[in-house]
Amino acid sequence: MKGHIPDLSDIADLMWIENALEGKSLDPAKRTALVRAKQLLTGTNLTLRQIAGECGYADLPYFGVLFRKLTGTTPAAYRNQWCTVRATGT
Image 1 (tube, helix red, strand yellow):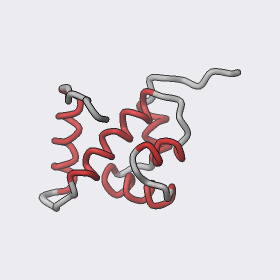
Image 2: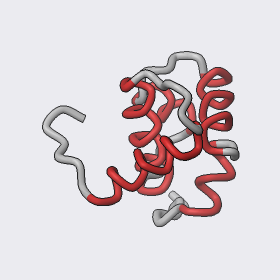
Image 3: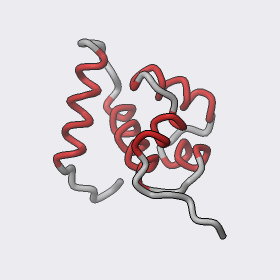
């Protein structure tokens, strides 16, 4: 995400995360990773493992647990609900 300029969607995501955490502290790197994960889940056809790796998590189950804890849903369910890019049959 080097050179990424936050847009309104990024800011809204961060505000939502803050409200979901109800004042609990979250490492800024984890916040950034969560916003990035949401972008990749909804805007790409990358696998969950690839997205976890792109967000700095080599351990897919840990990524899934953290994502669910922070969003209330699994990465796969989030993608199914909000995805704007659909897989193409190749």
